[in-house]
Length: 314
Image (cartoon, rainbow, N blue to C red; front, side, top):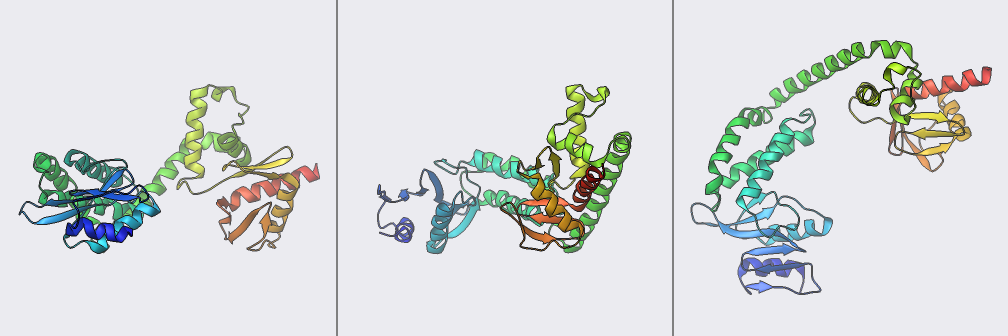
């Protein structure tokens, strides 16, 4: 029997239950399992009509296929709700809590990113859909209060013009944060070189300043410098240490190879597809180059190139 046949039988009641040790799906009465997690449940809405709750979480490629088979075979209205792995039911309290937790999380995330906006809206819609289900009566007050609290944001995120305004405000806010951070770190930025601060921030090398030797102070400074150098948390950084070149992604390559690579870049001769060690150059832009998973700012590369020039001159 194929998995799709099991999904079909689940809906049409050919057998009340099904389980086979050689298969990864099973069902019993109104619940359908993928491995050890209930991913679907046949139930009623508040009008007494049959509906099917299906997990909005896919967990794995295999479970994603199981969910696709259920969606394709389902003759009822489908309600997608969040589910947690190894759960044996769609418990009202747990489902509502997951929706609300997700709504709060994405409401406070960077809503300039489409994925965050879509996740917020999806969880808002899922929470709203629980009002139509049997068994969620005890959670109605919590549900309605949350929907009311976040309705304005939901409406904004469904308005293209409002999203443009939101992005503009977010960019202005981030710019102001960077300016404030730069002012706060001004003394440090003037006193130490760019590469000294990169090594301090990412390599754990202490600065020759006893005023910041205290562990907590040093830790706080590193955190602020990380936000200053990498505000979007998308960059990686590189530095020399003896015979190697290290990266903030915990990779190291031979220093001589890295120096040759940097000189090619400095002369404008670096090309996409070239390699340093086993890592491939994927993109070369004005502000950064991308080598495999590393997006390295050109300011970092230029600072390293300057170190090579100075050391050779000495």
